[in-house]
Length: 431
Length: 70
Image (tube, rainbow over all chains, first blue to last red):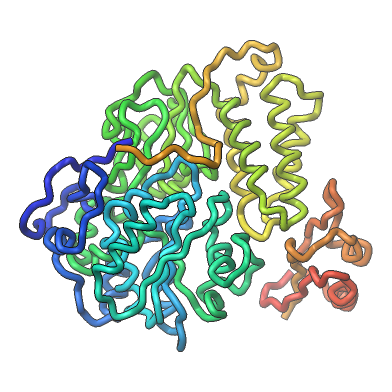
């Protein structure tokens, strides 16, 4: 894996221009974290403006959450700022999407950027403390955050909490549940964390990348943020590009960039691409032809039935099989059910097995209709959106690769593995 | 003010009383868990809805007031 900016850290604060990279500017190619001195030399010191102004600036910037929900950040901040007591800002660094690496890169290499955002948000909403939720297996990142926090002198206490890696563990109520001493599983809503969260009080749970953007908006302003991206979708975003590309890795691009631009940034396709999975395992497939000319912005994506989600873009090469990959993902996702809700606990494995039977060419008549009926019936019936995300993937696989089912029924698929990770032990983050 | 029926899927243990009491609104899925086909409770079923809420052994049925009109 690699990241874009390979330049050295400049000795003066960077210019306020509409150029890439922004979040990833100054990232050390060796993967070493930027210390506080270097971070402030690159970006300037932590701004000390009035907290209310920060929310206005974030509002004018049009920043939206980068954890998958795409919710307007200023609206979330305002809802919390109006509460009498806010217990915490929780930096959601769980990044349980197996292919996603963007938050890991930020936390491991640019910890002060994320911490700045967390502290600024805490001041803006009157939160008592900031808590960074990290992955259990990220030992080095845990150390990096501990060192970074020790370098700082923040007006609120900042601490680190480590949580398990299950796919659903990053869901905001699961994060709160674990912080409160319970298991890392979702809770029934309402109340949502912004109403009743950590210590039973309103809590801001925000994705790490979103807070990194806040840290730069606070310094350089809304107009700077909007100098890249589009009018409707301003600013930049981090994407993890993986699969049939020459240089898989985490990249920063402006919204509105055409899909081809992302592939080019990743060194171009390493073999002819037949389809893309956009949004991670909760995302959707789109065939390469249908994706031609697709721009990475909300309106275009929505028209194609897609959403950027956590920013994962996986290119499926011609040598692989979309049905096989989707069957593997479906089985993985079914296994990741926290087993709290009957429809998910029983329905997802049945749907995954039925889909796998179709893919293996051993399904009986009516299997496809049954899988689609179960998929329709399961929607909205879990405490979280795990079942909905899973069936969205399966349905998009049937739409995109359905024409190949006949070939599978005749036992004629010769594809190799595409390498989509489903093992919970993820590959080490490498440069 | 109308009433709306929701199921707390974490609390639900598929005991089935809700579907027995409100077959006009709910049905079983293939594993015995309730599907809410019609969340808005018509006036003539409101009393039964309240009964279902208190009859559920795990308190998984939630009857909420809503401003929506059926």
